[in-house]
Image (cartoon, rainbow, N blue to C red; front, side):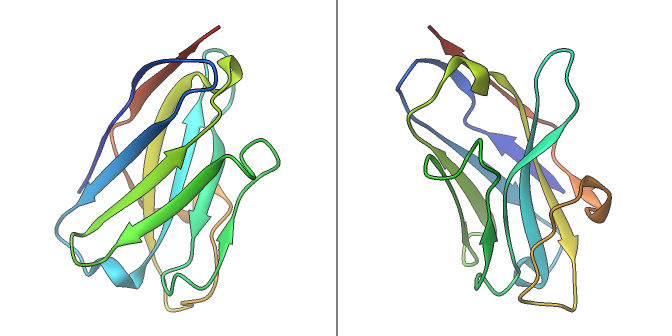
Length: 125
């Protein structure tokens, strides 16, 4: 199971750190991703990290502002979001996929088997 938290209301330029606590599986065997879905838009990935932590991926919309990380000891992964913009307003979802390819990031929604319930982020202008 995945439990996302940390969303809230923040002003433009502010920061938030989202957390996703996991249970029930060997955390360091999983590639991890964060997605978001704004009203009326399709869900999009904003960050992902390989199970080995050796590789990360960010789309242009997130690069330089968002950082994904994981704490294997706590079975928790994070999304640090800085310099937030109103267009970052969305429901954010964490996702995990068990993989034998430890240095591969998963950039497609269809690659993930496990999803958290979502946490809402609102950035006011």
